[in-house]
Image 1 (cartoon, helix red, strand yellow):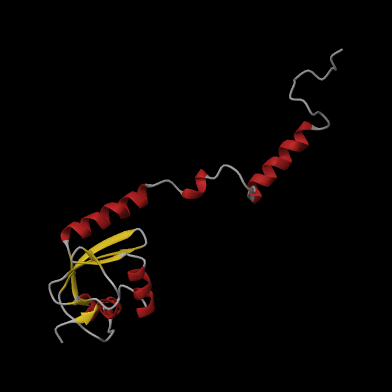
Image 2 (cartoon, rainbow, N blue to C red):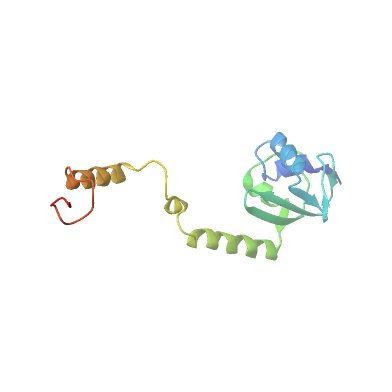
Amino acid sequence: MDKLRIDKWLWAARFYKTRSLAVEEIGKGRVEVNGQQAKPAREVKVGDTVLLRQGAVQREVVVKGLSGMRGPAPVARQLYEETAASIEARERAAEQRRLAPEPALSIEQGRPTKRGRRELDDARRGWGDRWSASVDDTPKR
């Protein structure tokens, strides 16, 4: 076997769980072979460069072997070799995600949490019957 469909190879190399997922990602334009947009029936051969995106992760791999069967992960890793630039970019992106602030902390509105609800209730009880924030309790005339 000297050539294999890209969707079958991506599935066998364990980049996608099913062939239909591989076809879907290829259809969305997230897979390139040798710098050109791929179609599911595009054939790859040993030595081709495949650029693919999986969520926020972009990988560039060189095809080292072909297999029409999906095997265990250690065997699947022998089908490709990731470029050094790709590995470095993935590690940098992982570090940035690790150092990024928690996304939930940026939410400023919406339903309060249980803790926030208790704080609001305690604050309302502290005001009593007053609706004004003034310190003076005597009414102004």
